[in-house]
Amino acid sequence: MTSPAIEHAIEHWSNGARYAGTSGRSADVTNPATGRVSGQVALASREDAEAVIAAAAAAAEDWGQTSLARRTQVLFAFRELLNSRRGELAEIITAEHGKVLSDALGEIARGQEVVEFACGISHLLKGGHSESVSSGVDVHSKRDPLGVVGIISPFNFPAMVPMWFFPIAIAAGNTVVLKPSEKDPSASLWLAELWKEAGLPDGVFNVLQGDKEAVDALLESPVVQAISFVGSTPIAEYVYERASQHGKRVQALGGAKNHMVVLPDADLDLAADSAVNAGFGSAGERCMAISVLVAVGPIGDELVARVADRARRIVTGDGGPDATSGAGTEADMGPLVTGAHRDKVAGFVDAGERQGAKVVLDGRGVAARGADGGFWLGPTLFDNVTPEMDIYREEIFGPVLSVVRVDTYDEAVALVNANQYGNGTAVFTNDGGAARRFEADVNVGMIGVNVPVPVPVAYYSFGGWKRSLLGDTHAHGTEGVHFFTRGKVVTTRWIDPHNRPHGGLELGFPQNV
Ligand code: NAD
Image (cartoon, rainbow, N blue to C red; front, top):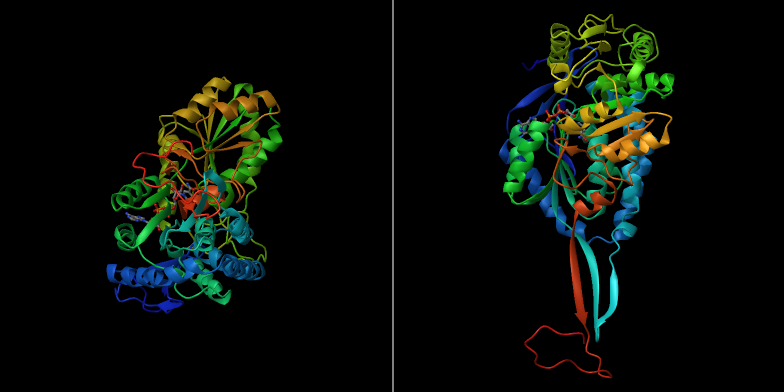
């Protein structure tokens, strides 16, 4: 239901300016810490989407031919602006997503890393050159931009996930249409304005607000050449299939169920701190959150006790410094993104209890430091979880940590490998040999050794295995550069009058000349 009192309209961004669109459709955006509607986001019709895609297409040729020096200057200017004004963006993220401000700043820092990586695009786009591959013949390779590319992003990282892609796409000479999550759409508009201030020509970076209708328009557009998607696995599968059917290259990153395996020789304080940080940071709404803690051997009781002790001390509340309570400092953990999501996660907690897991810490009914209408759920810890329970099988995407106890290393690895997802995993141990074996044994894309959230730095690539990623190209790093460019190999012969002029008529393939 749209509230008439709300005037804050969150529009599209097309050709360097806000664009209201013509659909007449919109959705409420809420502040999760208060439950109050803070704005209405436009939901694009197909016509709106086509208008925004056309703006990107109109800018594509000029931008693709703009010199590397000029493109790089814009990237550096964007980086400087982002770095100096990141506090504004963090506040926008906290107000619509709910994560605490320090975490919002962390998300921006990880996105900024990709901007910095893309500042070096000149080096990354260098091709190869081979002289005299045959008499008088040279070969060189180059990488061209694709044209218009689409990015479809989830609610949980409204700045970082788009920044996994657009700095590289733009630096490589493409124009972009970003379709952010309709739950927290304002960060993308702020980023669009920053690009304009940095000197990016109009039409190179565009934002299309909306839901499935906007997504389908991007997937089916004959103009859009590639789709980078991040979100839940069922939608990732849909996007991968639909965009592929329409001839696009696609990378579609999906959901996760990340296991942290604690071996008997691990430092249990480090393991407990790490499990709590990775399980409850951002209220568990991270694709690299730890949601399953696998205790190997006799350490189960001690590990659960140490985790519970820490989790009990977490303050759940408003993510901003001016908490409703007037405490003046941010809480440790914010609310969930929407009331519906909070209820869904609470439903999983009910199911866990019903199906026989031991509730060590119950986040339902938490006394949060914030407004009554906030979408609160406190840290929840389950022990004695087994693989057939719903809380083990499903991605919960909330502050719910499940402890599974196993007797051996082999059982732990079998558990990790049997899971439908393969985004991230971690092993905690002081045994280098065991860690090395773990790295080889697990079928997972990103692995931490005594590091619970092993998100790769920007110059490596981010991506999971199995149902956590469809397509074969991971995000950012050199794989990102590859994704946003198309290779060409040029074979050249210049007639040299001092050498043999040319081979004359010869209908067969040349042989060792
Ligand atoms: P989501 O799948 O609901 O939405 C993602 C995007 O798809 C949004 O832009 C949304 O508007 C659009 N969308 C939603 N339903 C659609 C439909 N029926 N047809 C077409 N488009 C649709 O995901 P979310 O709830 O915003 O984000 C949380 C999910 O994202 C979790 O599953 C999480 O694991 C995943 N995620 C994965 C990674 C990763 O790197 N693998 C990173 C972040 C988040």
